[in-house]
Image 1 (tube, protein in one colour):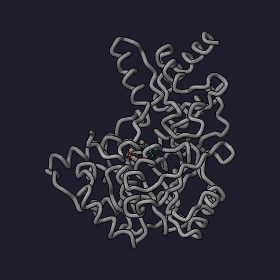
Image 2 (tube, rainbow, N blue to C red):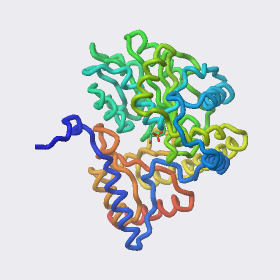
Image 3 (cartoon, helix red, strand yellow):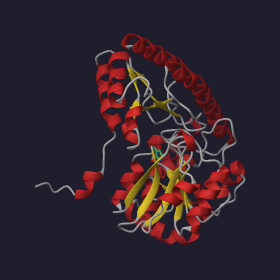
Length: 388
Ligand SMILES: Cc1ncc(COP(=O)(O)O)c(C=O)c1O
């Protein structure tokens, strides 16, 4: 008899991990693989942040910090909202966490009672379902498509609301679709969730990576919601495991207590390094990277459409394209395997993002340079012409 807890039956692995392992195996055999499956920037952490981390290590910053994070870092994050988004936030409402993952775990743990449900979009970030499962809540996935920019709307939330619904989790820009919720719709979502007596959680992890528009924060028009963010994507710090949560004031005490118990604190060196993340020098580097991502999107989007993939909504953020492959196959997982083995291109199958038509979608991440993206497109073109 297995001693593994029953809840683990509901925690699925990432299918892309098998693919990644296969890609590494092929590379070890000498094959060249173009990686478009990876959900993290190819850019290293900006040099000034690394230097700040090295200084912190050299000066012996190797102890715990307060559970809520270094006060100076919470001040800096508040300054970021004020200066970049014109939104003043009380640093007391900010909790520094081990990545957005830590923030999501905290917020769902303090909010969701066993049996309560959390609404979320399908396709969506797969871990969200599992975080809800871990606290014995019920993840309720709502199918979304191009009609709503692959995002939930206030009407959809209202239609799906049940007696046991506690919260709605939105990611804008979204993983895997890169699409945003407009300001007007976010306001309606917020008002609807309030009226229904629930709580809105907005994952803004891709906030800085927005193209063709200024970008913003949901905190601009409300403070009775939770906002999750991270140093992983825009700041290029995935491996440092650092993020944050902005919460309503009356949740700070339970969040602090839980953070003390499950994390003690976010990584100290990472926090000291991140103190340098908001300097003009780093912001300049990050802006150049943002523009590089935009140029990649502008190359890859028409190129994939030209190959026959359907991408009906132009994504305005993150670094993903969620491409319909219904014209070329009825099993995107099999297609992803063939693309890897026969064309040497790694992409993520839709299966990783939910149950709503996953077999008809692949996620392309433009986390590799233009030259490689271009080579990847050519390889797919040859693969399609040979299989067709
Ligand atoms: C939408 C979304 N939220 C949260 C995370 C977790 O990121 P991290 O824990 O590295 O901050 C990711 C990572 O891919 C993501 O795509």
